[in-house]
Length: 222
Image (cartoon, rainbow, N blue to C red; front, top):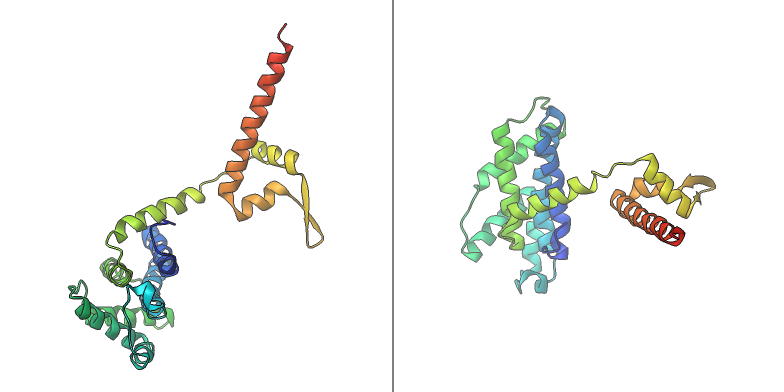
């Protein structure tokens, strides 16, 4: 994920990335999950923001009684969002009524009362609401660019392809390891937990092997 985000903003942003990944796939299952995940991200953005130390909110302080009131439920958290917009002198990009309607629609899907598929327009609008709430609270003006960058990074990290030749390079170097009494090839474990490192390490070993072969060839030259 982009390091331009403050560390306390990364958790809420991860939920937006998760929602976005389902939003972009677009089948019926993913559209339901996108709706639920964008809605969840709105609530988590507010919860995370109100849980911060004032120094992490550019010095903004709120009375404990007010924070307790806002943290009670989804509706009270949305009340905070719109009170905060007024405090900052910002403009409302999405109406309170719309966000609460999306939330009600989300509950129908989450609790199984509605087996239908969210309309694309509904997904577009709750996506706009989720990005707006996050960007307003955490002061991230280029949230669309941040999201695009994060999605590209995630796509790249899952693009690593496993191959027999790369497995051989890693396993010849590091061999077999034991976990919970069982034996595993290093390549198998590495690929499952960190595909990027799998490719990086394979590349390093390939370069090393190439350099060794070149050195042998030079040494054999009469």
